[in-house]
Image 1 (tube, each protein chain N blue to C red):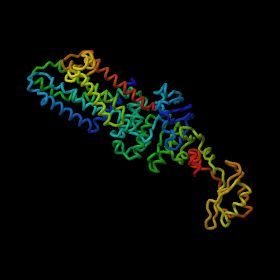
Image 2: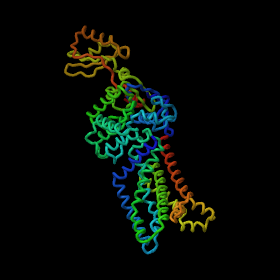
Image 3: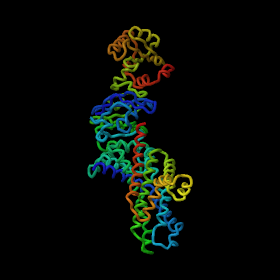
Image 4: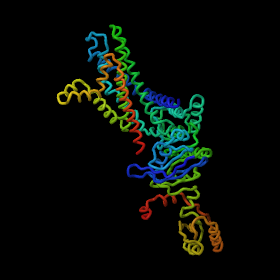
Length: 247
Length: 318
C-alpha cells in the first residue's frame, strides 16, 4: 500500500499546516459565527416554528462561496511560491498522490468545520423532533458541495502562484455554478431562452443538486454530479501542474 | 549511475538545454559549472524528474526517469535551488515528512532523522519553524532532507549558496566525504569550490557542454598553464625579458618595484612542459640572476572559465 502511505503522509502534512498556522482557527471561528448568524438571525430559525435545519443548509452554497476558496487558495499556489513544488514532485510519489492527498486533507478540514456545527443539530432535536434522516442527507449534501468548491479552488490554485488571483477566480467559478440554477436567475433566463436550454444550464448548477439533498433525498445522480465535478476539477489540476513542468 | 544522452529542453523558442550528454559513476563528484542562466538548474530538474525533457534520455541507476520515474526518484536525493522548505513546519516535522515520503517508518525513520540532523548540524534548531531560520540553517535543513534516505545519488543545486565561509568549508568537506560512496552532481559558480571538492568538472554555457574533464585538465587549458613565474632582484625587467626571448615564446612583466622584477615567461609549446622550467633556470644561473622565487604556473580555473563562457563580443572588448 505504498500509494496510500504517500497520500497519508501528504494529508498529514497538509492538515498539520492548517492547524499550526492561525488559518484553521480563524476559518473555524468565522465559519461557525456565520452559520450561526445566518441560521438564527437571517434564516429566522425560531420564527419558522418547524423542527428542521432548512434555514441552516439554505445558506451553505453562499457561505462556502467565500469560505471554501479561502481554505483552498493556498493549496498549490503556496507550493509554487515557496518552491516546495519542486521538492514534492521529485519525491518518489506520483502527481496524483500529491493532488489527492492535498485535496483529501482540505476536505477533511472542511468536514471538521461542518461537524463543529453539531450544536445546531442538538438545538433542533432538543426543541422538537425533526427528521434526522433529512438532516443527515443535508449534511452529506453540504459536504459534497464543499468538496466540489474545494476541487475548483484546487484547480485555480494550481494555475497561479498568487493566492489572491486564485481566490477570486475560484469564487467566480463557484458563483457561476450557483447562479446557473438559482431560481431568480433561471426565471430571468426563461424570458429569453428556450426552457430546454435553461433547464440544461440549470442542471450544471450545484443548486439543483444540493436542493434534493436538503429535501432528504440522497439520489445517486446528485452524488454522481458532485463526484464528477470533483473528478473533473482534480483532473484539470493534474493537467495544469503537468503543464507548468513541461514548460 | 546517471546517464544523460543528448538532452534538449526548450521553453517556447528558447533552448535552455541544448544537446547535453554526460555520465556520472559511483565515487565521482561532478561539478556543474556555468554562468547564471546557462542551463545548470534546468538540467538538474530534468535529471530529478521535475521537468520532462523535450528530447533525449536520462537514466538513473538504469531506470529511465520519464518511463520509470518512481524507482529512479527513490535513488536520488535532491537539493533544489534556493533550498525551499515549508515555512510553517518545524525542522523536525519537515524531516519527518521527507522520511515518510521516502517510505521510512518506525525505528528506521527515527535513525534516519537523527543521522541527517547530526550530519547537517541542526540539533539547535530542531523545533524551530523553517521561516524563523537564517539562510544558512534553511539551506542545511533542505540538505538534510536530501540525504535522509542515504541515497546513492545526490543532486545538489548550489549547495553552498548563502552560507558563510565556515559553513561553505563544512559543506564542501561533506560533499567530498559522501562522494567516496555516492554519485554526486553539484552546481556552483564558485570556482574554488570545484577545485576543492570535485573529481570532474563540466562547464555548461548557453545550454551546451563546453568543457568536460578533471579540474587539473581544465586548468591546463588556461593560457598561463605551464608558464614560468620568476622574481629576480637587482636586474632590470627589460634586460631579463631580452634574455628570456631566446628560450620562451614570449614573456611579460607582472611588476617591477624596488629592484624586484616579476616576470612571466610562456613556453614555446603550449601546456605543461617540464623541460621549459629547466631551460629558464639554466638561463638564470648563466646570467647570475638573483632569484627570489621561481615556479611553474598551474593555470587558473577562472581564466579557463572566462575564456570559455564569455560571449565573443565581450572577449574582444576586454
